[in-house]
Image (cartoon, protein in one colour):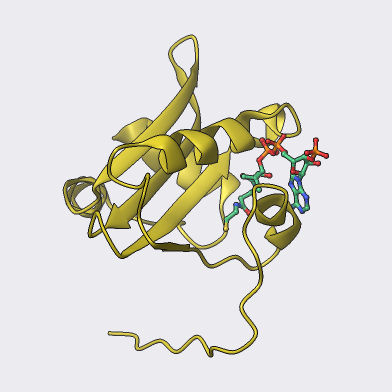
Length: 121
Ligand SMILES: CC(C)(COP(=O)(O)OP(=O)(O)OC[C@H]1O[C@@H](n2cnc3c(N)ncnc32)[C@H](O)[C@@H]1OP(=O)(O)O)[C@@H](O)C(=O)NCCC(=O)NCCS
């Protein structure tokens, strides 16, 4: 769990400061998670929640900055999409601040007719 915490703290902007206990709960609450390793170092991660039929969401796709631009992010997303929990699901969503181009290369399209709403606790 320490490696995931480190990857999030060092290479994401939205998942910094997450606590180990909460990360464990996060993993338990995700239907699928994928990881990439260089030896014993965690260098990539992604996860998804899914009802298995109608809707799924990708979350927390991160590649270590020293390993970006080598196809790792693409591989992580493709693995998530190919997983039994996601393949065949009617619609798969994700939210991104600055990586829309990356996901569009993977077949995702911007949604213009819907509005993203959120509620913070
Ligand atoms: C976004 C991220 C996951 C991409 O991973 P990566 O391993 O660097 O990407 P890949 O090497 O697999 O790139 C696949 C393709 O997407 C393109 N691409 C990568 N990042 C991109 C970006 N931010 N915007 C547009 N295109 C991008 C690559 O040029 C490549 O194009 P190609 O098909 O012409 O070769 C990675 O840069 C990252 O972790 N960034 C920081 C965290 C982040 O912002 N995550 C997204 C959360 S929604």
